[in-house]
Length: 480
Length: 93
Image: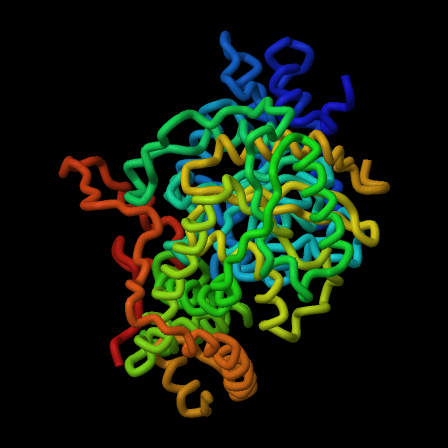
């Protein structure tokens, strides 16, 4: 057996059930990697609680399904008594009173939470540089960003600190960091996973999902978190269990490559890796044809009206009264609100609150938010039409490989355009998987595969077959 | 595009204190972002309905059954200032 921290989650679960390792050793191995955190993956470790939980699991007469395998959790997800900040000063030291449903389900199934991972403040960003606490470095190159906003979860998995992690994805925040860190990320159908306990950013888009080193691990994780939760009225009765995929070919699968997302804005090395992957689709018996989604060119514009509008409403609750530090002592309550929020939020969060408040304000609503919701319909319809002709649409996950720390900080629009490939999928509410499909300049390239709502099993099967043919080595040089 | 008075007005609506430097930076950055998003003004959307929910759901109701609420002490646990088992705030205007 390999060193415990090198095991996939699937292999770790198998070893635990076979009695080849205990949860306590498994958790110790992960914590040892997480404590030596050269990449800045973790905002907080739950070392003591994790060790205690592992011992409890080891003492159970019957081991729970996930057996005591460690997991890292994005700091946007509430965990009872474990500090949860969403990467923001305005929640510094905040200890939630309850645990997010998806995390509770995993704990119930025998996963052990080892810590909370770094992220862009309130999940707003594409590089994790908007964290109020620290930057995170990409295990593939320490001058590079890991992507974002789930950058800490992506590095924890890519650097073998945890076999898998939970992230959240509003416009690409699972898929893009997975792509930049050479791992697998899944954004499920909107409503697949309960959002109860997820600190809300844009409620019509937010969705929790897995990051892992293999498609099978991502599927196994997803299988434990999907389904209706009475505490989230948008969560869905899931039609059929998520299966851990076994497919080795793509016979009968029609893949449409999105012409608009293979254009000039895509780095040549990224385009080449995606084209090679399309060649492998054909070798595996699948069919590849171009599809056109012209409205996707309006995706970023539409998203940057809808998401900030929703965020400006969701973030109204952070006022320094019921929780979070009191950052201002004014006797006048309005002044207290304004100053607490002025000190507690970072520049990107302020920008989005301002943009959203503006686009919802009297005189601008119809021209901005109202129109954006109509463009959202156009984008959804184009995907629906495409899915009459193909089973899966493919594109790069990110038009570039991991960029340098600091490179896009001064230019918000350039940062927003990092998500040009992932945003249309989010607006349509459909599921997508990002898998690594090669290297360009020594850095990982991600391939995004998207399907109709509820097509997770088909999508994961195709991703698994293709992953086998690509044969990507997920070990960054010098990390193990 | 966006002038200084609009920034001040919107910041007030958002209950967000911005200092003079932040206001000027915000004016420039928001103008740049709105230049980009303005591309959707050219689309013909007359017959396109807005999307409010991506997955159609109707009348999601739960049974009206009471359950136990958090004990007061626990609900107040994270509050920065408490007076007599209540959240403490300043005066209105």
